[in-house]
Length: 459
Image (cartoon, rainbow, N blue to C red; front, top):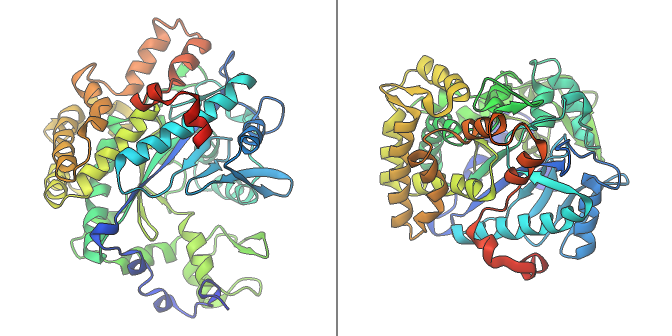
């Protein structure tokens, strides 16, 4: 019997689980999960999963080009595996690059450039484009097809009962997640606290989801607003992160008390009907006993703004163009991988009370850079955070110019990308879907300009 199949007899059997993710500083890496929205170039409507102009058609072309191995659910392709990175699908057909772990940001940047170039080359002949936005701008929820991934059937039924916007989250939103390492429990909880405190500010900086069904949403990050009405038991900010005595055991206890969506037995997902994982360990379910593999799967169904697995995952940012997505990663690496930067960045938000954190979290979604963070606006706080991150990157020997897309926002228009999107949609684009698609599907990394056809072939 493998370790993953070990039956759990009590919460103490999970002691030390998160310690297993500890790595010495010289082995720290960084990874990106970058989601984009597939649309038809001519109309901006979301592409279906099946058909000649579809998600499945693009995946099939990528496999035929070489370098990817298809992963199936029945006869349907639901993911691709490469040498390091993976391609996965969100419930509404959003395509995600699940990147490899990189020691250097330039390697991560190049991975994003190769991936987006390759996907574009295999999508354009089909009349498909991929948008760097946090929200499907045109297609109603009911007209977006579900990806035929078995776990999504249970998730959709479950989340329909826990909030009013769970299906919007699943099918219409896209984000950027950043994966980072820690050296030990103290280091992990220090990063966990700081990133949980700063994530609302970063949401405001990269807010990019202001249009839904052709109309302004009233939010700069409607994606963030959606997450706030998805499932309060497993989403949002976690108050215990700000306890100076927080431990891995506290996160474990949080995870144990969240209702369990499902387990996997012989390739079939079993609905646990909302039984908490703690109770699943204690009394089982329908003859099944909880295993370590079940707990690992359960952790993937928790969606706080920052979560622990065997690494730290930061989840609060909207998707954007490729350069802006890489800029998000650079910002967090600059802050969290340098002790002085981490302490200084935490100081920007450490005075806030829990009530003030919740209020700012909502206001960041509504107002973007106009949100108030104590005596500062998000614009002012973001400028300070940018300086801290630039200094942190410099001490790590990383190129601070990867932060230039964020600097241009803070020093240029001085509004979130969402505000610029809405202004252009209502103004110069004259509410033309084609013009929005052309702009929001651009490949914006400087490396794209040097890529050429060989870059896609090498991926």
